[in-house]
Structures are given as C-alpha cells and as structure tokens.
Image (cartoon, rainbow, N blue to C red; front, top):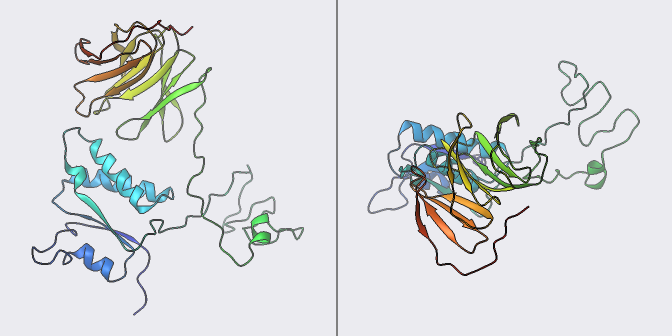
Length: 300
C-alpha cells in the first residue's frame, strides 16, 4: 500500500472514542495508520461554528502556517461568533510526530507589471524563468546556484499587506474578532479601521487631542476602545465611526486598554500608576487600583 499523504483532515465527530479504548476514534485510527495530522471534533458542533473553524483553519494553512497554529486560528474564529460560546474547545488536533508544517507553499511570483502569455505559467514577457532554470542570458537565480538539487527552504512568513495613511508612529494594532478589520493607534492623534483583505482605510477616528497608544475591539466586534495620552479613553461605534463615550478620570497619560472576555468591563492603564475598570455601557468607573503618588505625565 502506498504511504498516506501528508494531510490535515476535518472529520465530524472524528475525535469521539469508546469508553474502553481511548484510541478507537476515527481521528486516532487515521493517525495510527500513517496520516500526519487530523483535525477532528470531540463533541457535536453547530454549523456556524464549524464554518468559522474551517475558515480560520484553512486560511492559516494557505498562509503557510503550521497545522497547530491553524487549529488555534480556527478556535479563535469560533470565539469571534460569540463571547459566551464554548464551542471553541470542540476542535482537537491529532498529530503524528513533531512536524507541524505539513505543506510547503511556493512563494507567489512578484508583480513586475508585465503581461503573461496564456499557457506560459512562470514566464513573463520580460524573459523571466522559474526558479532553477536559466534565463535568456544563461543566468540562474542565486537560490538555484547555491542549492542545486535541493528544494528551496520554506518561508513561513511574508509581507502580504502594508497599511499606509497615518502621519505619525503607529503604537498599537489589533484584529477584530472576525479577522475582517484591523485597528491601529497612532501618534498622529487618530485611530484607524482598515479592511484586512484590501488594506483600504475604512474609517479614521478623530477626537483625541494627543497621541493614541492603545486599541481594543469588544468581543462582539461592535465597539473599539482607544487609549490616549490626553488622559482619556474613548469608545467608538465600529459601524459608523461615532464616538459613543469618553472615559475620564485618569490624571496622566493612558497607554493600554482591554475588554474583558464577556465584554462587560473595560480595563485601562495609565502613567498615573493606576489601572481602572469601566462599565462600557454607562462609562462609569467600577474600580481603581491602589494608587501611588506620582508626577502626572500628559504627553505633549
């Protein structure tokens, strides 16, 4: 029998095993039979959660990440559906050996601005050739010269997008729970919302009077919190870009902000040596950490 291919399989209820034999499940049997990795479900899972997992999982695989990272991405995608769901624990990974990088994806061809001829994949009108083949002048790519007969080393990370528009240093970034948006915080006194797929700026959030250094999405993705050295935090409506609330109380610059997992509290950190917990719905300060007298720092 030919060897099993290196693959990751998504099997419905494939991690369910018998009481007397923990390795009797489909996933365990496949791994014992030679399959490199199996992503399976240990409990029943809803269709929305399964779709979210598959989207996060295969997107990570397509980007050259290891299968363990891909499973983590799928779980995060499930969490993006609801902050109260526990379905993210349903997917599990069975791995044969220690190698989590099951696929080597070729790097995309650089866009040279030339037009490719139909049926001539890998060759452009400028006479460029695939790796390992000489061009019209008999030159070989450096990789082919240095490692003839050996496959090129896989590159797990590469630049895919550059988000440009801020006029000051960018000090904070965060993805929305569904991975569609990216929020950035900048010393140009603004925060921005970007479309991850296109790198287009969806919204520029203005209102702070000094540097913005922290950004955080609410678990449901409807709110964005920003922290600024103007001593305030702000809550923004992601859909409209409107400022919902301005949180005041800190006496010095604010540098960090984070939502609780259930979205009912917002934490802020400041150079006034305190952290505060806020109610995002009302803007009321719920709690202030013990304070130590310090000279306030107000940024600019």
